Image 1 (tube, helix red, strand yellow):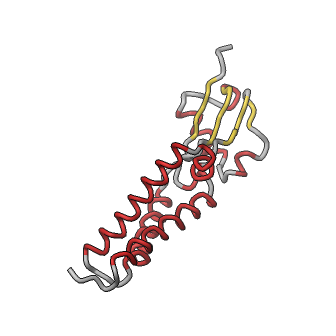
Image 2: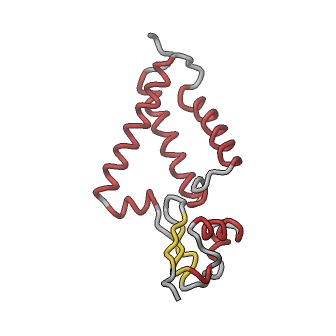
Length: 155
């Protein structure tokens, strides 16, 4: 199969798009894809279609796509391997958890800081079988966008 560009162009485009998207997602914050809504799925589909063009350009050959995707997978594996060995890099790439509530009280401004509505917060509590913030010891927005809840001891 003859490619329109040298193979390494697709590899560099794939790696560049991956790194650029990783930086954008970190800048957007934890809640970007922590809870997938219909809106998030539509955005993800549009982003995927747009980035396909950025990676392989006008080349329609499957080999071009395979090279771009392989570069992304290898870079992802390399970053994961490196993060497992260097905690500082892991914190930079993955981020850290944020405290939303403690001892039955929502931290002032914490929900707004992470673009979380009261309804989404209450929904997360109900998913854990809790009625309101008064029932929690701690609620955190994890680095992966999920909400973890530690229940307060029974009164």
